[in-house]
Amino acid sequence: MNVFETIKQNRRIVMIGAGAVYLITTFALIAGITSGAIGAYQAIALAVAFTLPATLAMLSLNQRPSLLTVAWMAALVNAFVVIELSPVWIVIAVAWGFAGRNRPRPAIEARWMTWGRPLLALMVAVPVFTLFMHLDPVCTTTYADGHTETVKATDQPTGWQFGSTYTSSTGSSSSSIGTDSVSETCDSNTVVWWEALVSIAASAAVVGVASRWPTSEQLGSEPSPINA
View 1 (cartoon, rainbow, N blue to C red):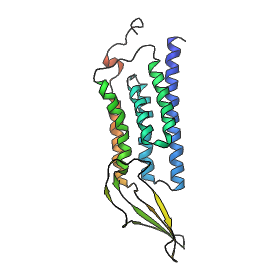
View 2: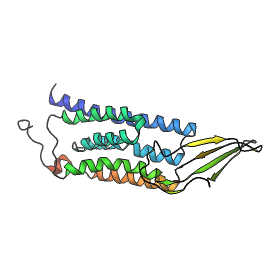
View 3: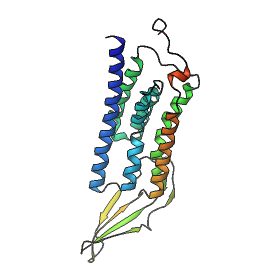
View 4: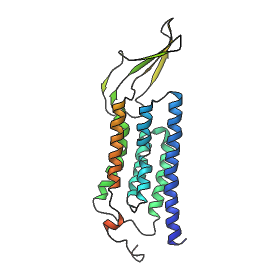
């Protein structure tokens, strides 16, 4: 396989992996919305947050090969944040790691990237955690005539919390509460509009840093094949 074919193969691996992330995220969030498991605010913020590794990978194709390392590191971070999709994230991380190591010439790096890349990769978890650090419990009552009513749950704790994840911070329960109603469903931690806005802003900050990542041209000329 010549150099041109190797480059094409690596780009194809990156794009297929990114496409898989976008596709899986879309289907998962659509399923969550249609089932009522998540709300619109939460879905939008999670869509942006969960696809950050794919966005970083795609940005690496724009003359930023050293950014691909951040992408596969970020995929591993998401494997710990979203336990249910860990196998998918690990496979994608391995594929992107292979594409990065399989370059005809090693990507040019600056000394600060040794700590800069892991730090940026860890930042992809921030938008997810910001959605669930403030407890906002609500209960939705469904009445016999079909209409629903949502009120703030007074018997559940509110306020700030730290260390919770997407997989463990939400939950619901249903119970019959009288002749005038059919059931009551309570969620221990809903996502309100300002939490979604903060999460999207955090995601935008990650993308903003990645978009300012130095290109190979800014870092210096590519090494010759003899020195690669």
